[in-house]
Image (cartoon, rainbow, N blue to C red; front, side, top):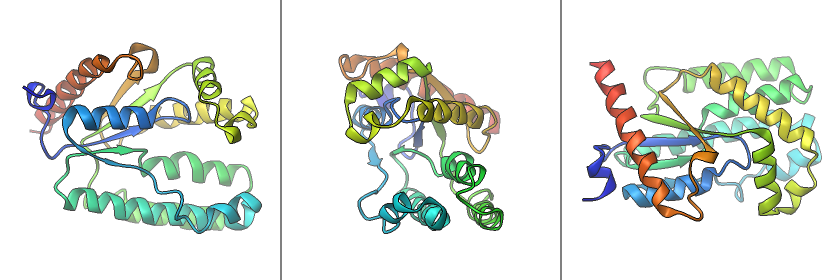
Length: 222
């Protein structure tokens, strides 16, 4: 029996993986997709027409960048549900407004008017009963020290040059965001409780928890 059937996870389930840089979102996305026989949905960065401009001038392009991300993630979310579900999604649409747009505004890279326009657009598009929210958001969490160690281990040049203060800020922002998040059910997983890189078998207890969580959530809705 496959793991999806064994733990009663519906064929049409949509599960989103969230968490700060370095927690292993992509690894979890691929691991769950393989275990459940689901498709994956990853962020498309290469085709983003604003990214290079944004890095050259945060203040001029932060609003454009966030609106672009919002539109692309909205289209991707619609496509996932039009396919009939059965997806693991790397990063959620909710992080854009709850973390990144807010950070740009608070740091002075987005004006108050642009921020209000963006959040109004987000609320009108996403925070409605008509928007197809995921069945579950799996939030990957860990201590700041563990996350910084992982970032150092994977050795991406841009990340190695980033001051540790930035990772600390992102860690705090993510924790504050998830503590008040209520758009869909949340399952929190500590990154020290499994090792998908060195032990593929550690995915099964996670699938078991996901199956139980989805079942309990659906029973509460009845």
